[in-house]
Structures are given as C-alpha cells and as structure tokens.
Length: 382
View (spheres, rainbow, N blue to C red):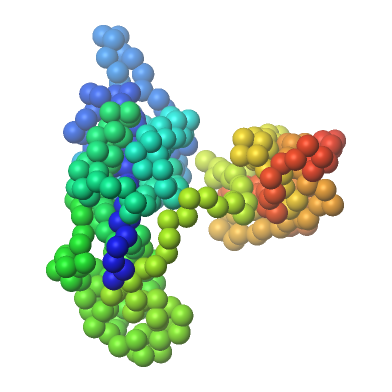
C-alpha cells in the first residue's frame, strides 16, 4: 500500500432519487424509482394532494435510472427494466427523470467541496475523488466537514471513503452507505478489505469475476493469496499483474484535476422501434434534435469537432457506427447534421431502428477562426 497520501472518494447517496425527494419530501422512507421515458409527472387530485404513478402501471421499454435504498431492499436497482422490476416492487413510486435538476445539484456539490479541498477529479455526475494530502487537518474532522458542507449547500447526503489511494477509497465509500464516512489506514487493510468479494474492486466486471470464481477466488483476500504467475497465465501479463497489485491495495494513480474530453455524444432509445419510411418525420425530428444537443454541448464546453459520427441500434439489437472526418472543425447544429447525414447514407436502412445517436469527436478548444461557417441542412436518407 502507498503511504503518505490521503485520497477521498465522495459518492452522493442515491443521487437522482435524493434530488427528487427534495421536491417530494412526503416520499421519504418509501420505495421510489426514477426512470422511464414515458413516465408521467405527479398530478394533483381533487383534494389538492399529489398523485404519483406506480411501478406496476408502467408500460414500455424504460429502465431504472436510480432507486431509493428502500426500493433497493426489494431488489430493484438501476439498469433494470421497469416492467421486470414491477414484479418485485409493484407499489413502488415511479418518477420521471429530471436531468436539469441533477446537473444543477451536481455542480453545486462539486463547487461546495472545491471550496474546502480544491484538488478534485470529476468522475461523473455524482462522484469525485479528492486529494486531501496537503490539508493540515485531522482526517475524520476534514471528512465530516466536507459532508456537512455538502448537506448544507444541497440538502443531500453523501458517503466518503478516505484511504491512501483511489482504489481503496472507492471501495470504502460504499461500505457504510448511506451518509457514511469510512477511513482506512494501512493497518486496517487486511481486516476490512480482504474479506470483501473480489468484484468490489473497481475494474473487475462480471466476466472477470466469473472467471475468478471458477478458479476458486471469491474474496479480495483469495485474490491476494493467488500467485501472480497464475493470474498472468489466466488473464494475460498486464491484467494479471494489475489483479495482483490491487489485491495488495497498491494503486499509484494520482488525482487528475483536469482532462480533455475525447468526444461528446447524444443518443436516444425509442419507446417503440421506428420504421425508416413510415416514421420518417419522427426520425428526422429526433435526428435533428440530437444534432442540436451535441452542438449545444460543444458550445457550452468550449470545443469544436472535426469528426462527426452516428450510432444505430436495429430492432434485432445489432449496432452499427459510422463517422466522417471533416476538412474544417465545426460546432453548429447544421454542420453536424450535414456530416451525420453523410454517415447515415453509408448504413443499410432496411429494418426498424431501436436507437439513434450522434457523436462529435476530434475535439479541440474553440477559437475564433477554427470552425467552418454553418452549412446548409442536408436531406435525411430516411
């Protein structure tokens, strides 16, 4: 294990659901699920009381974006299909996702943490790493101060793990959820970490875990006891050595406070499969909207793009991607749509479509003369 560093991993507790409960405090303590593209917002009944949709009434392909801990206790987790989840928790409250609110509270909690500890690595909408090494304050008091500041600013709770490195802090932030503060010293490593399942290590996915299980390796301690030679033979040299190191609690990765994005993309899964000819107006509307959203993302983040691509998932779940590299960088919706239309002309459009996406790659910071003038909108091939 690495000594001398103090790295924190902060994870907001059931973030999307918790943000929703700020608007609907009467739902606290109840199983609540957020998700579903066709989910209706709460309505007001004749007595002035809010009426909420129930999971059992949902019809469609939507998946769970998040769920409260009460819903998770019933076996309902993010990524599950809503109709399948209704079998487990039919009476759970179902709310539509509000991503504008989630982005607002995401920015608010990160700004709040930065005022206390500025060395932050952004890992997504609801989690960050924080380098606390150079802050001269007791670890427990500092961790609690950060938690208190986040709650005061947002009304939301978070869980924090603090250890010598990112690997262990990520594990620790999940050990005492919700509203946890877990501090791991080098002396505690074998006692607290080795008994945990190997899949608790970030980077060991379902397939790797299945293979480890077949080798009789169930816990992190089992993995630590395995010879590096055996792990390299089974997983290859690079992955095998990585497994050996992480089982020993070794992780030298720094907290990276800034990184350039490689691409920006937007995609949407349809409520029903859309036919290229019969649903052409609908597909055209969705396609144009995706191009505008990508353009908005580019402008907001200050980038131009030289590579535009599309992604299509057919009704049989086959996925096709195409992209085109432009002679000049672009950032406007019309130019993005024109380039994406070129990509569409290079894919077969002879079956129904389940998902459509638009991507902007080859990014560079926007400059006054770096982007081409907006182009005329091209006709769609569907």
